[in-house]
Image (cartoon, rainbow over all chains, first blue to last red; front, side, top):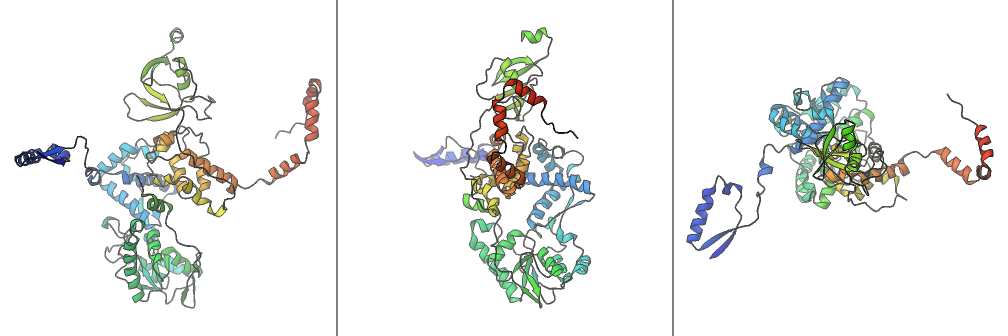
Length: 307
Length: 235
């Protein structure tokens, strides 16, 4: 009898048993035996699909607990981030757990054993309700106050605000009312006296962590973004994301600045990284230090992450 | 056990590697092991919570949590299931502490112990630490190249190794911490100028004569000198 080496799987052995019995029956009719592997386990589908796979929130939740205590101590109710990826990660945890007490409870099974007393108590006293509101610095800046502090108005400087994905997606964590065309950074650019340039690629993905496994994918995405900016005569691209800054910076003749550096430029006329604004022009910093990926990303690249 | 019963002490059930013993409550795990007839060859050192040789893991009846302790510090509790782990195999990087560039220290921890990049922030190491050190925090600091923080947070580490036993990312935390403290001591901590001065004085023989005099003095002379010594004035 001809043999087929057979991997059954959990469902076929339980609720879909009739599939296996019928398969065996028809195959044997044709002179073929389904030879089951003597040793097998779950094919692996369950954990990535499980909605209660909450491990990725553990780090965020622990931070939100510490933040809750700190915010209480200094008498505020918002936690501010600069990095858009941190904002996105923490905000998603805040939003998701506030609407799902069940998920918070699951997380508390693990964190209830933490070494820190505040963390141990996360499921008590309303848990997630004690989390501060996570915001990005862009949401806290009063445009009028910023404008009043400007000493070197960036007259004539054409600036593209690049949002990327972390500030805009998913919709539940977006920093601006508009998902498709946010303007929170453009408002800041105007307050500094510069000219905001609206660019259809401002919320396109820069390629993100593909930089680790497929540099060309990033190059393709970035060239589209930078090409569009060039066509529109952009003098500087601003971002709130270290990874966007790295990816775009690799393939752009247009200088890439953090939004905070653009403010620095308007307040002080120059940045600590060597940019200067004089005579209506942005003078590029000499390429002194090469932009670097975070150490953890580099290691993932070299070693293939977890083995 | 007879002693304990005569003194009317309360007995605790302790399970050592699965075998049940009854020992007086209040003994340290180490004394309880000796009370039960075990003789320590390894797994014992200073008996004072400083050397890190007596790492022990245990579970309490009815509790799924695996806990860690130093056998010379923690006392036995009724229903404790335990075993000692006196040594933890962990790779130690070979490095030279000399001639490093002070501005490039940040990358050294990661270069010698690249597995720290696998940290998932699960905090299991911190939970395991009998010294209550925020182990995960110093691993995260190490990953960022913040040697000063890693050295400061890990200062009380006695290298018992329980963090390394429990870590799902298989990090050898205490070796990373030791490298951080060595780098901190050699390159970051300000050098004490008066220490250099005093070391030079000693080398030049400032105290040699006095030492020789003491070394050759007989007991009576020593007693006299001791009584007549200069005392530092109190506050």
